[in-house]
Image 1 (spheres, rainbow, N blue to C red):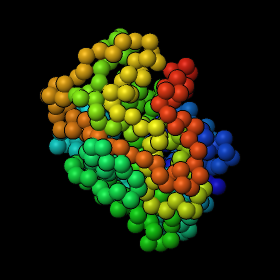
Image 2: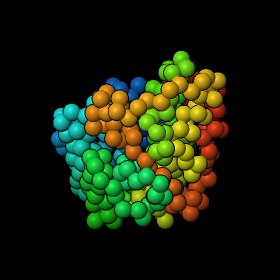
Image 3: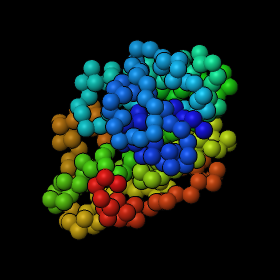
Image 4: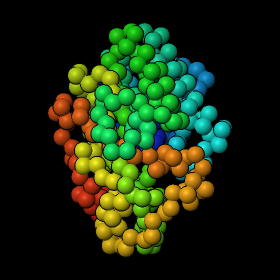
Length: 306
């Protein structure tokens, strides 16, 4: 197949490109800066400003499937009004423009896999959340609802749409785990607040695996939870990460301190989302890392580029 990918230069995108190329697929990418595609071999790159316009028509030539991973970073930055606008527009307007370009292409792809997030569910305590669960409340939930609605418009012209509600991706080459390693290696890692909030994580190999599974499985049409079945609470995640690094667990970080440091974004960090990947399991996906301990061991025993 020929597959068109946005967000190909990000953490997930690079891993997805490598895997799909290894599978024998041809890859084209959409990016603001084609020069940023260094390290991605055997791909063609097209310049695209996602919030301004549809992709160039030539990018769609011969495309069988599209994968949409692009979006402004959500965590590790304080949410100002401007940052929130950029988070929303990069997802909602960007997806709207991508689907508009898809609609106008001379031939549409057969399948469209669009990224979403477990933020769709909001803060839900101990409620078990599968793909049929309703959206929650709050900024991220609202963004995810709009984001998914824009992607789903591709169904209007016969494209199968898979909406990947992604958990926290664990990888040594970037993302949340990389940011956690320094304080934990110094023995300063501790649980967040009470530590009782559920933490929906997924190994980088499995986010790639579920994405490939969604591409190839006709039964996946709509949302699919991309998080590991062996979900843990924040306190257990903290304990397992400290143990994997052979370090002590430090004092907890009080919720009030997080809110002072992060502002509104602290609510997202402290959210409890007990997400279960019901559809992935029902359609035959087998997790490489279903449980946290072997997932952390695999990542912490590999080189930083893995």
